[in-house]
Image 1 (cartoon, one colour):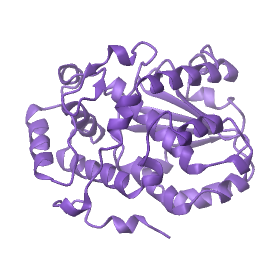
Image 2 (tube, rainbow, N blue to C red; image 1 turned 180 degrees about the vertical axis):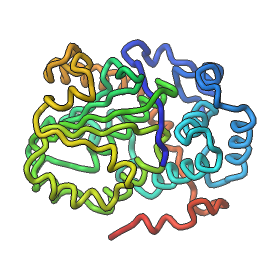
Image 3 (cartoon, rainbow, N blue to C red; image 1 turned 60 degrees about the horizontal axis):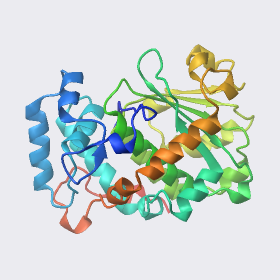
Image 4 (cartoon, one colour; image 1 turned 120 degrees about the horizontal axis):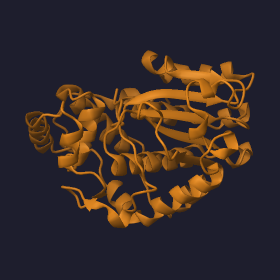
Amino acid sequence: MAEADNMIHTEEIGCVQNRNMAAGGENSSITVEEEFRKNPELKKQDLDELRDWMKSQAHLPKISDEQLILFLHSCYFKVEPTKKTIEVCYTIRTQTPELFGNMDPLSDDVQHAWKLVQITKLPEPDPEGRALVFGRLRDTDPHHFNFCNMLKLNHILTWSMLRDGGTNAGYVFIYDIAGFTLTHLSRIPLSTLKKHLTYVQEGYPLRMKGVHIINVPTYVDKIMTVIKPFLKKDIMKMVRFHTGRTDTLYTYVPRELLPKDYGGDQKSVEELCQAMKERVEACREWYLQEQTLKATGGKRRSSLVPDFRRLNID
């Protein structure tokens, strides 16, 4: 699994302040030098080996050393698992154009997704230094629900956090599923869900440390019946359900770190999401470049991920 450790303090870092990454012209607030200072486990020979391997894989895109470090960090600096994570990441991008075909923040799909959901990184990390990411439905009408657009926005925001934050102690995700109904569930394409969860669990260069679901409905068992087959056991162990809005959540996430709509000291969810939307749109050119980074099947040499057709269930 690509369990990673990367978070952003984007309220402090604007795209205009970002430094150029080493490859591809991407903008980033992180540097190789800073990552070596932060991570004594990071070894130059491992980065060199990974860079040389990437050069030998004609099907893989050219990515920067900063991005390679994110992948290494997500795999706890083990080179071979890192190679597989990179393979999964860019191959699924190629196989799932409905999620990665157009990552333009100003596209109709992404703008529609902002109307459906609110997703944002919370301003402060938890006491263990882990980044907190919050999401909920904005529009609860299931007839407006578009799962693919929602996931596209989710991927855009996740890569924004990875790009801007560098490595950290991990990510904790908090999802308020108030208003999510069985009709919403019926509108989720299972093949896309499986590819998405495979990408999240095996292709994201981040360390997942926890998932909290709040405002859980009585029919959550039916929701999990659909999702659980696609989740690894170690991920399932991280998932905690909260029937109340925040009562038991405070046991795991200090109250003051939450938005004020949830009893915390931070800005409202709406304010935080609007600020994140503006930051993402200001970095539009980066996303247009990022969407081109995919695996080219005809040039594949690696046997690390020999047959991605197994990801299809339809």
